Amino acid sequence: MDGKHVSRREFVRTGVAATAAASIGFSVSSTFGMTKIQPEVKKTRSFNPNMEYRRLGKTRLWLSAVCLGGHWKRIDKVIGAKAKINPYEGPTSKDDLSAFQENRREVVDHCIEAGINCIDFAGNAEPETYSRVLRGRRDSMYLCYSHPASELRVEQNRNAKRLVELFEAGLKRCNLEYVDVWRLMALERGGRHSQADVDAMIEALATAKKKGLCRHTGFSTHDRRWAKKLIEKYPNEIEMLCTPYTADSRELPEDSIFDSIRKYDVGVLGIKPFASNALFLGDGSPNSPHVEEDDRRARMAIRYILNNPAITAPIPGLISTRQIDNVVRAIRERRRLDAREHAELQRIGSEMWARLPADYQWLKEWKYV
Image (cartoon, rainbow, N blue to C red; front, side, top):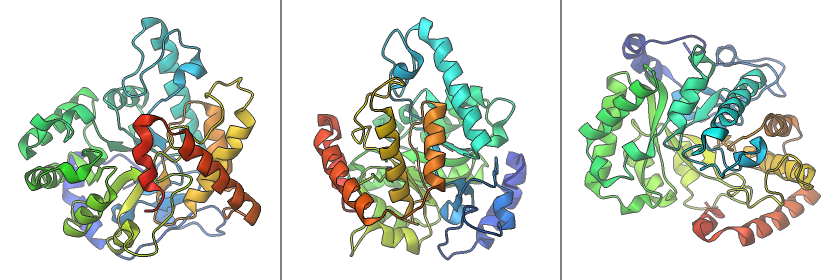
């Protein structure tokens, strides 16, 4: 089912049974370093035998070890834009629009060729932008859908009926019959939501899945304590979580969110792997004198994050084919950092925290998870 088109009707008929039959135990598998590839992995979208694939928890979707985050921060540096491009909304200048669209198509093309098989939408312009790029080849990618303006961050949307209606309207704008995951976007500080908000969210997710608008459901938040409570209370609807995990995050020895993630077999897409680019020395320009060093730092960060098997995939906002090649190289490199690399990453991590801009100071709370 993962390797070919699934209509909404087919999903409604078979999806529940397939999910119920899935293994409950947490497991991670990959093609990289294995002599025998599991048959179900070969059926994943855009399968490439040179790519590592990891299971998105109980969804049983096999995703590439790095996926494409929808944001396009610093893309203006890559395409030589005449005006700064909003990382969530896209170009405001018509002069930059053509180059922007060509870049997004080139990046998606290169991802597919490399075996990267999932895009996570997290900005208002992203669903329609990537749906246009994928037109005619929708089944090359798993889609994790979110549209902030239509979800819980807007107070007027916090009832189940409206959430589902807005979700359906979004799918229609994108010419999509369904998405693989609806990961509804909550407040960054999710604990500020009332119980009524949570009830609306859970009802909306369950309704959307029942209607065949999505195959699987989850949510995103920056509030790990709140996320842990929801994972434990609503295991049927919370199949995956989209949440921060950086190059200097580490698991708490006791009462970690990962205890619940493993217990309830929740898939995790890790945002902010590079701490909103605070990990790097350069500004993202292709001709920056720091390109080689920044590429090396990115690879170390990816290797470090993938050492946590509870993370299905980090999702950096890749903005060039060079960056894609670099993360693919990281996946193929030796996974464990040696003592020298570990010490260096700790030093770089300290510098990263010190460089965080004022509006990202909250990310420091994700050092110990």
